[in-house]
Length: 507
Image (tube, rainbow, N blue to C red; front, side):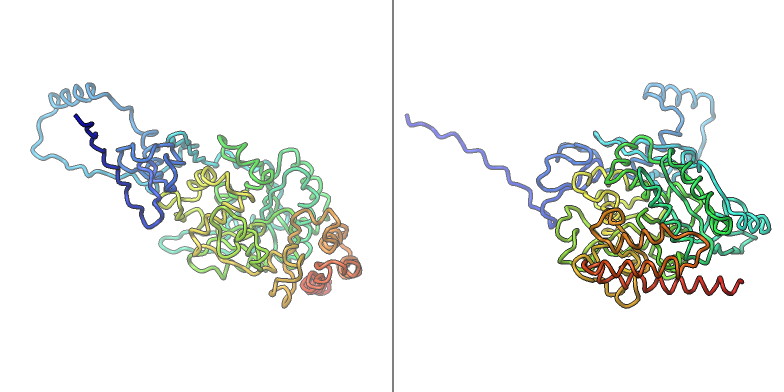
């Protein structure tokens, strides 16, 4: 007898790949995974093994809220006994009430009484924290002039912190414009002196009142209060000050605090902490204003109905750009954006539902941050700035991009001048990133920082600040940025002359 060949088992036919390269959506959390992934990167559910109906993250959050505040559940046996008891106690009704099946939606849920919510998807726990109790300011110092103004107008403390305060009278809404520019900064570690110099540049050149929101480590609070209290009374009446502790979601403090630089990611949570502030200008500690703060604040009026934030491009020249050459994650536009100077309409930011690549459901600001970090934390280099690039990559209509002279960095001159707007109008805001204020790599940047730092309040700014600075900049011509240093003083000269004219008029 000849050997019989065993029947060959037909090969399993692989499913045809979709248009997006075979990517698949998790049937539990709807997270979109790559074709190579055998299990969901977000919740660890294996591909094709779950038969559960897809449930978006937002629905899970809503379900968690409902479960947290719902009455205690009963077993099937208890439910049956309860229903039989109810039938015997009540008379039968002729009409049955129809109950429509309600699909839980996050935006319809009132979470005002909850401190934080935990949503577990597989091995991932997403924490949504209510900062209402945690974000109380540690100390507040209010200028005398502003205190008199508020007492005369009778405005409440909540209204004084809003960009536009509103009073309702029947169906009419009356608006009172707040002339202050609201400025926030985050200071950790050895950033005290740098932050004070930034605040000094803002006070020296601004004509309208300011409100400073300083987020700092607890051990820096006394140093800030002591330093600012030493400023002349005439200067202190031009600004309000509120000191805040560093505040992160309780369950993820270490992860957020160590992201990129200490405390740098605090800026992501400002809309959730300063809930009564309508609009805000965030700046890094290494920023120097070369013109009044109200000038960049005025850009809010140029926002269209979709804009909720404004930033400058990371690079003007793609050939030296970082994001377009090295980034392993989505980023905004051609070269990404830099978050060192960030103007925000925080009311819009808190209300918007953001498109994303984690779920088909749009998520609010407080819902998107932690899942975004969990997905990209191994691929991001510049921390919270990378997360902002990812968010605005998927929501480009929400970003207003202002020119590079509002955030002028060494990258704009280190290989030759490449900021055309600064060439025409001068530098408006100087950003000395990479520590250039404290080393000899870019002496032109350091010269501007030291000139403002050493200037004494009350002295003539033209003779004690501008002229010595111009003389020092002449010694930096051996560097590319030194050759472009006339751009640093172009707008600064105009700002100083304008302030000096106002002082002369008052006399």
